[in-house]
Length: 503
Image (cartoon, rainbow, N blue to C red):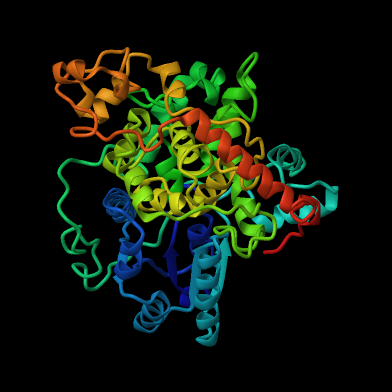
């Protein structure tokens, strides 16, 4: 009976009230009471999440709680090292008979979702899951791929499949939650960084977390800039601008405080009204489709986050040198552009997409020949907008391990940054040791004579590292030869034609 439904909505990534299909399912079931719950696993979360991303998450939860309270509800943050155990206790504590949550295609999340679902069913709790983190469920893409005989293993092929998917669902409004009062109002609150034993922040987060900030940024960056959106081309944006040359909506999509369906709807409306809008892959609509593409790859390729056991990735004999990776990670490579990127990443938790390209290429095939998995771990730690599918997919792309195989095209750690910032203002912002160097030497300070270095108050090798690589051109050619050999050894083994959908 509807009047006996007591629901628990398990918030995972969809940390918002607008366009939340799973939360709507609880309301549509006629639940007389809905317990919105987020399970925080400090031991698990702290293992691979830096202070910036954790701050963004906590701010998102605080914002979500405030939004729920305006709807006569609240957020229950449950802490513990075992999500299944914590949810089982919550089911019993509140006599839950309906569980709703958002589908998450990441393998670990799918496994957890399956465990929670099995537990709920053994307790006679009805379970409803909905897709809200991507435009379509991976199984919908797979079914359409079979129906239309279309592949989805390259971006171009995926775009053809997407066009064949038909109309998307309309974004949902904020649901009307049942009015209720809850006991223990001072319990289950969002913890602080200090309570989670993180060190205190020295400055506010540059991109604060939460649905309210997400919707404001959507309006400011998209709705109010229709002409800019109409002519947007990702490759023409600057990786080293002192203020972002892109939307920086990615942190809000990552945590689900912004609905990708709502974003896509806004972008499509602008494109349809435009005379000659830019198109995928370079348009903003194209960026959303890149996200869908990598999510689908992550959902259908076994062991997507590793080289071992991955049936489609190129097997390349990368190295894993802890000292080399540490210098790159901490912005101590001796190449100012790369070091500026890595220092900005660590300080702010966000870097431009093309800056990620330059840093990833430098670590892997471009110069240092280190395993892309190690770079992916560093980005996972520091990025506010870390996303498992996109992170692993992009690292495979940039290392020419999968998706992109033109290994003879390489980012220069010197020339690439000069294109958009010839004066090196970005470098001077993030590598202050070099702030007195003139434009002539700012990208290659080791070329400055010793007397000039004295005048610039920075000796290379003492105050700033000497370059880890003596000759980028020579080393990159050597690495190209290595990849060519690795490709030849695996010829005929890795083929997208042999891939099968597996979810």
